[in-house]
Length: 300
Image (cartoon, rainbow, N blue to C red; front, side, top):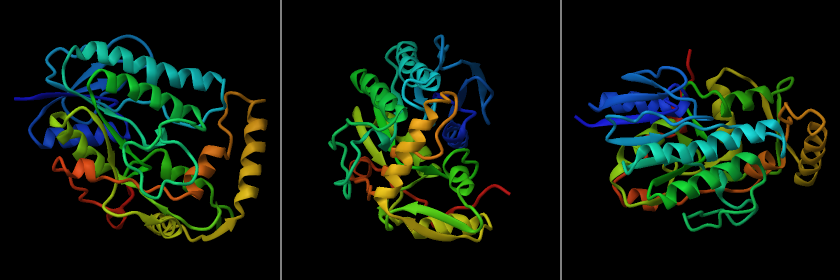
């Protein structure tokens, strides 16, 4: 029986991968600080040390530090320790085993021109530490011959990041977004988990992973709000105003380096420009996205 080691298996994406692997008959090693939802726990802090991958036939690396910290802050250093240095240690521990490394579409260069993003889109010019550290980590993984998956805005039941941030921005029945609505790719966590479990046999390289079709931003937001029983009107802030507010928020946050700013240039970029991933490369290997935002149901 094949044994799969899933790092970050107690987290959002990793728990879905571990559960899916167990359901498909894999022996599962849940590698991380806390036990995962299936299989055997292998303790590992991705910020230090090397994991014991004894007995694993392949590795899916989901462990990551996420957020939007101020440049040069302690939080950015901690993020690098996990996303870059932790990747280097994980790759050494893998010792030639197949590795599927979960990256992010945040590695792609920001700005306009992302209405159809293939894997050869430039990886540069990152607006925050998350994009920089994920790009540096995936460069190590690609150099080691890993398969790298690039989802965008992963959502689903139990999401601790994307949807909670969205809901927290609702004020007095109003949610303001930068600029007019655009087309955006999103990735259901189930679609990402399916790709993680298929990708070990794919040729080394990067693969975009997203839902079957892109979404209208404002309608997608309304869908999520309705699913959570939140009644709110979506309003638009002119893009120059949003950029100015984000710049001011980042400047103020430098005075409090342990707190993430409430709005950043990265967040504005991700919401105000069309970002549509071309997933044909993954589809050519036999992967298909089976879920969409229409299937979204939050945890009770």
